[in-house]
Image (cartoon, rainbow over the protein chains, first blue to last red):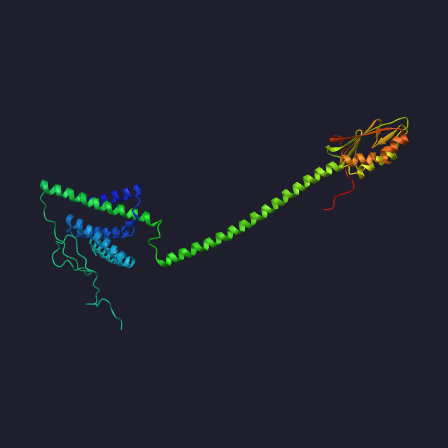
Length: 110
Length: 277
């Protein structure tokens, strides 16, 4: 409940505030969003598995975001930023897909 | 022989390991093979202590905050990508560049076309202006020439007072011709503007000019070089002395810096003649 409420509040805030994100953060924001999405879907899955834990969600959220950002940052430092961000996106995408399929199994029982 | 990056085991690709959230699932959290999911156990009965509920409220608040952060970032990023080329691939960027340069070329072409049009319009406008200017000039000069406009300028005023003899038309005509030869541009006798069609004739009662009777004293105004005009009249043995000697008339020539000829002649209507285009 709190998660959905927070999501709605955040979207509304983003729509109405429309802040300018700093240039330094621009390449990392999409990766951060995808990582956070992955964390959220993982949390949803564990919720359906009845093994949801706030603490784990918070930690995984931050670790996901920080790891993804650090990877892209590292890639930028090494000159392979775009490739590495693609790799991160692919991995996170696979995770999101498997999470979604797990959710589907829980919801539709099959 | 196809070389595989990930060697297959029992015919299934091992997806990257996915840890179920919570970490309290029994029996191998890494096991995410499709079709095999951990056993969902019943929720343990919860104890509602004041401390526990406070922590729970705090953590749910934190969860809400994180979700808000996610939504916020998502919306910002969605808004941001609309106006940025950051996420485009190299080919897309090249295509965009090509399109833009093609558009630039087209616009340049259009610009040069429009510039050409502008130039031609301007030149035609200039031509029109020039034509208007020449027409105005022509109007002025032909107006003066045909007697349609009043004129003024340097010139002479000749006064002839008759004695007992009348000055005849031929002599007066000679006087006018002399003035013309001396470069008189505009001439008027008494109230009559002298133009190309002006005639002089002898009548029983005196001179007639363009159908008007001329009576002594005759006042002839001529615009031109005053010295030349004066000389033309007063030259020894010229028309001036002939009038004096032959007709016993008084002839005076006055030079003036401003001879004003207000007499005008209505331009005649041409019934048959038409201009050639």
